[in-house]
Length: 387
Image 1 (tube, rainbow, N blue to C red):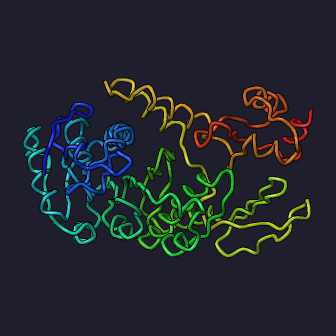
Image 2: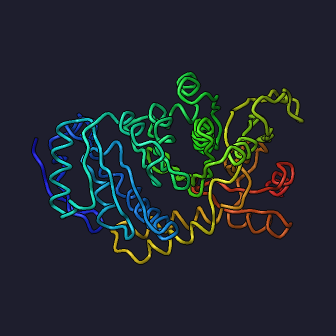
Image 3: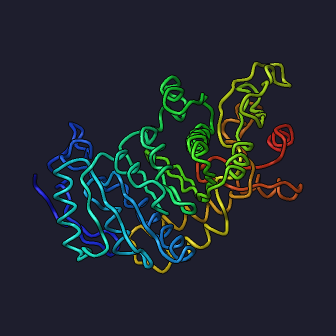
């Protein structure tokens, strides 16, 4: 395997030479490499480092598990760049990955802090039940096969970080696959990526409930080809019950754009919209907040102190997330609503200003450049469009 040296953040790494692993279209394909490394995820990893730092500051120390490590980039960066980390366990089931991770630990002189394992991820997590206060689950594809073990490995207080790259099933392109993997039904709407993130969050919470564990999202974003969520974890059956009460279903009207939220795991759902059209349903999924503004502020402040190449874009994402954090579930799309009312879409800035002057919450959303989030009723929004 041909390797090359790279630098991410403050960390020097050896990774597979991307020039050797390309598709016919000349795109780099991480799945073709003997040891997995995706350079496009540096943006996500930078944010993860700052999230881990905020958590370490809060808890006083951090025991981290990177259970599906590939070349070890996440785990090595946590050990190198996060102050307050007492141990990072870096694991991959591949023997080639094991050797490359060993090289990267040595390259950064992290031997006392970073521990290396060559084991099946589920076996490793179950063996370390209740041990870690930061578990990072970053698989190639769906995290579903690893979530039960990841929840078991969490300490009484900590955080679970989850990546999903199977965004097509979660967003409604492959409905049956989503039902199989996540026990929830998606629908194709203008806000289908938000639905996908909420389905993923709800699934994590239901799995955690088996362990009397409550998972509350403090940061969630849909970027490029992946979803990423950070869930604050606390033990307690009552806390877990409280989380499950905020799950439910979204009923969507494709004709007028109206959406109805129903809180309950087994509710009786409405069948017909006020406009007379049949409703489509998605769920069960998380209907609470996806972001915590206070937490986002701390992560942004940490990012601003760091010298990351992609810092400007990362801060812009977090600022947009903070902007929409207090808004209701399910954003609207200006182009979609304009087609519904057969008019031209207004400028988003002007639309948001008008909604705010009427006393409504209104903001942009990171999910879409043409999307906006508001608690105004759909009839009130369309009146503004018609004017």
